[in-house]
Length: 188
Image 1 (cartoon, one colour):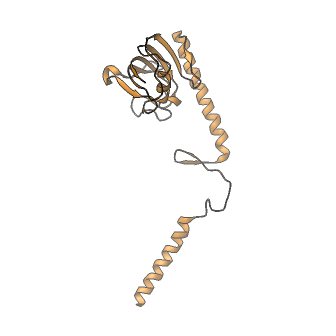
Image 2 (cartoon, rainbow, N blue to C red):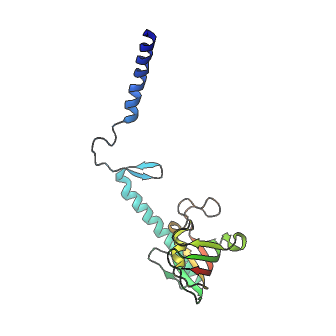
Image 3 (cartoon, rainbow, N blue to C red):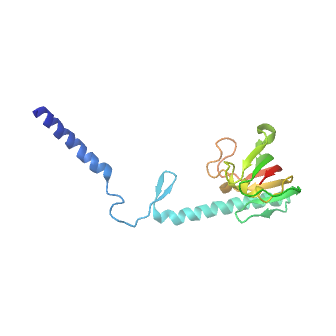
């Protein structure tokens, strides 16, 4: 019996400090301190303005690169409010896809510097359900501007494509993408 109570006391002596250490006091004092997360990192709220400024600068720099590309190619492109540029090279006679439409398209994806990434020639025709696809949101948005049967060139900024992480294969971090597409089918 003495051994049992001695073992329990040792166990309590070990567990009580661990319980207090794990429980901590963060978030329990009613503090209004805001915690900001970027990935797995905590960011000091004072740095929030700095992060916003850096993001704005990155977007402006990327937009300058896109504008330079468009000027070099002498494209007369439409621009959406979100920053996507597109030009319809051949206008089809079909309807434009709406949200949740099922579409099929041929495509080639390149970087602004002309490097080849992917195409339907090697990967097959792309099938997308707009609004419910893993394809970049920028592509899904742009497709809604293009009538079925059309051929178009679309430039998607990285923040509407694969972002800061890229696709882990041929599309790197913060890569703007140039899609040449032919919209084959639209089922609204």
